[in-house]
Length: 129
Image (cartoon, rainbow, N blue to C red; front, side, top):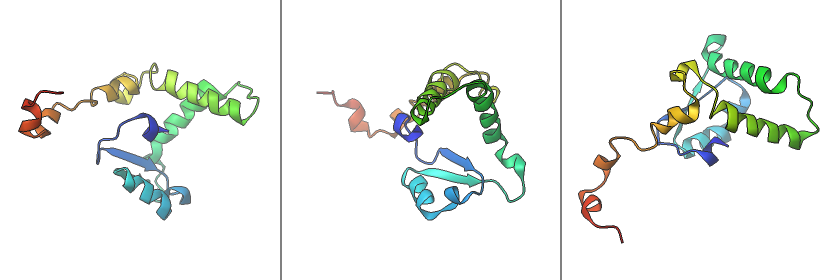
């Protein structure tokens, strides 16, 4: 979902996970590599490595799941997507991001200040048709 809705600057995104087989299998690691995403796994027996992911799951459960009754799998998917995109990513303040929502925080990286310097000189001086 994130790859479908966000631009990834090669080599800047780190996917942190636990050591589950679904994250360690060759196919999953190849998919991360295909998108220039760096894998990072918790050290064996060290629960603190995964603290940020655990914090997210706590937030998801407390703010979306607890007290809700879902009518089926489609309702769960719709509700989760709505929570993640409209509340968690756009409105909810995150202390690790300077008390800004993720969308606002990521926006500062949308056009890196050095992007123009990476363009060939001719591309910068030629008029756009």
